[in-house]
Length: 158
Image 1 (spheres, rainbow, N blue to C red):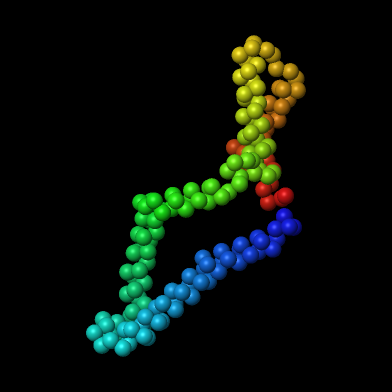
Image 2 (cartoon, rainbow, N blue to C red):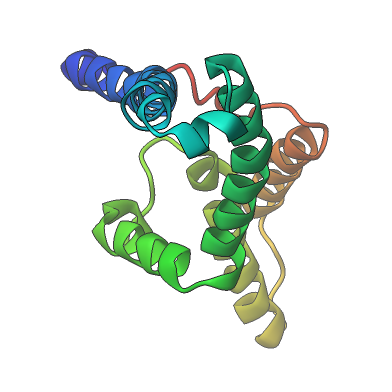
């Protein structure tokens, strides 16, 4: 983690900037520029939007529902979002190997391995050793922790 502190900070900065700061500034800038450069100089538009506050209220009341609809269409009704997730999935190395120190490594995949071993033993009518039974009990405890909403390995502690 010490190696990635700078990159994590850079990522958090970019997310904060693009998601919140730049978005708000862009909205304020767009409203201000369009009103004072376009509407203020066109008499017909000035009758519809007599003040800047009126303009902002009308544009926000139309714009927010419109942008929500566009966002919904982007995620649910168009191929754009699925294409984006395809690109992200293709570029993510953990889609092709286990993530480091994740809960999958300590519960799911050992469970899958154990289940396949149990199937093989069962098909050969073999008995389980005491060590194998102990391993099963340990996995059951970890699964119970996950069911209870607890961590097996705290993902925040690496």
